[in-house]
Image (cartoon, rainbow, N blue to C red; front, side):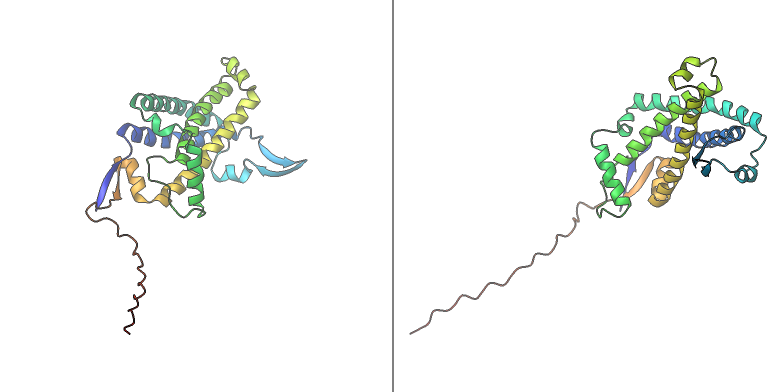
Length: 243
């Protein structure tokens, strides 16, 4: 026997599925722009350990010489990304959904329990709730990262018109690096998120499409059997001797 758990309102599902392709185009077009000037690398002295990204990577994805195209796509989809995100924030506060997303004083403790369970270091699964502590922290920071991406994007795209914003973010070079690191954060979140969805299985994925999830219910008329109690035999009472 199963019961229905309502998880995601229709508006939240729309915001989620709109944001997915929009963010994909933003990252793709951003890569076309980044190709024109890609200074970021990890190096020790004159030796480069990691380069973002090698020339073969650009050639494989047909990225080179598409700067103008990338800027056009990036700027257009930026408005969709920003408007969708703004509508999402307004809805969460107006509907009270923010209570499920904003971390509280117990979220970090719950997040540690979830992480320990995911790595097999905790046997008992944390309680089933809409968003556990780890999800609250992750989703809340993703919202902050979205705001940061928009602000740093304006700062590096219009550094003269928004000179005050560029200055607050540390200058043009700092804002560009911050924008790049935020994009890397989105990509890492995407892979972790997809991995967790696959691990959770179809019912969890279905809830983001239909809004509800079917879970097993415990029949109150047939409670779980208690553990058997071992009854030790009592010693026989000695019969008094008959003289």
